[in-house]
Amino acid sequence: MVAKKAIEEAGHEAVLVENGAEGLEAMKEHQFDLIFSDVNMPILGGLDMVKAIKEIRAYKHIPIVMLTTESSNELKEQGKALGVKAWMLKPFDKEKFMMVVQKLIG
Image (cartoon, rainbow, N blue to C red; front, side, top):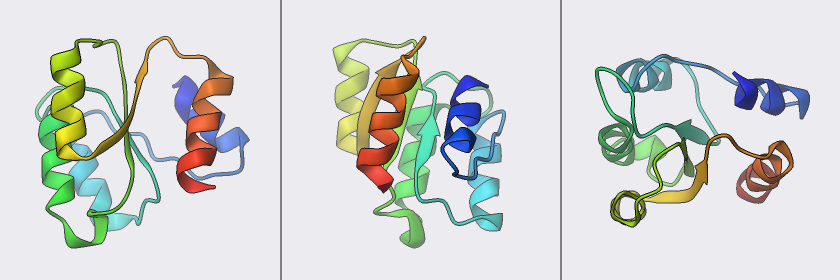
């Protein structure tokens, strides 16, 4: 995945999962500083995953970015209400992507 490669090239560790359920499982094994999600994922969609993440005490304040093809204002508002910090459309510009990463985790 392009996002994973960009994060690793910047010196950060990245964990890639296939769906929201795997994402929640990964949180039991890792402590993440930033989470990227897509809206459309099998088994557990991105917005449902965000809701579940925000209920985990250790992740309540961890920034989440939606990296998706979905651009409706309704979905963006739902994400914002759940705690999504940024919404980026795919395909994304690597430079802008890394600016978001730097802004959210330094």
